[in-house]
Amino acid sequence: MSLRRIWCLLLAVAAVLGLPLAQANAAPVLPWPDQPVGTLTNPATGLAMDVFGYRTDAQTPIQVWPLLGADNQRWKLVNVPGGVEIRGIGSGMCVDVAWGSTDNWAPVWQWPCYGGTAQVWREEIFQTRPDGVRTTKFRNVNSGKCLTMDGLSSAQGRQLRQFDCSTSDLRQEWALTTSPQVAACTTPAVPPGAMFRAIGNRNTFWHSGLDDPFWHSNGGFLPGDLIRFTATGSTQIATWGSHKPPSGDVGDIAPDDGRWPLPGSPKYGLLMRVRTGSAVWVSGRGFARSIDPGQWQYIGQDSGCLMVKQAPGDFEFLINDANLGDNNDGPDVTAAQWRGTPYYTG
Image (cartoon, rainbow, N blue to C red):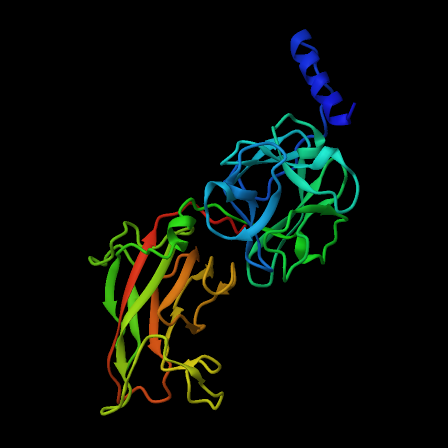
């Protein structure tokens, strides 16, 4: 009989007889408050922890897949003696090492939650990355090994496994995004939002304060909010020049000669930056790469989904042009916003 079945039998006998079971060490302090629900994503690849095929049956592999935000990618970290259970929102089952193995590269699947150590994880080697993203490693209580991606560059669709923990192993890092609106923000069908004109011949500021009557979300920006900017229309480059779309001249990259606002990105493309506060990319430019104040970012026709980390007072938009003074018109930018739950950064 497997160790798992023996443990389940002991639990059943204890429940019937009213016997106490020996408790593991007290649960550690969680790196994120309470018992949050969210997506767990590897920052090195942007891939999310995912239940294969949206399935709800036992032994379904836990894999990594592009971030979609559906319930098969949403998890609740439940505080239990010795660590946490990682419970799937879609299935209600726990992330579990197959058959309680202690071997390197043992596969990880979902299994009904029963309190065994093969599905209890300690959040360890907790750190804040240079880009400001807070991550943790999940060490299995039974094996002492860490929840690990099977590869980095070609990991999509591969089953998660356990492997010896290492402070430098990027395959073992996991970041938590707690907003339940990630799926809405990352979908191609972005709902209508507030529209404004990004003037082609000067910087355009878009304010989000409470005193802005045109902003459609109460409270401006709050930490955890999701934002997505999409742009249409065009900018006339020079008085009698041609019109350029928000994507700019994709095949013509601005040189680093001190004249272009953002060298290395398409000429005449739409740029964005935050003047105060900061944000992180959730999708579109790589998960959880920080956007710090004053740093121009190329967004073109679609910024992808952004999450507010420290609430910005306003966003600033600019055309990537060495000479703005003779431009006309400008793209129409639509700002869609979803009110999220806090993004925990410590």
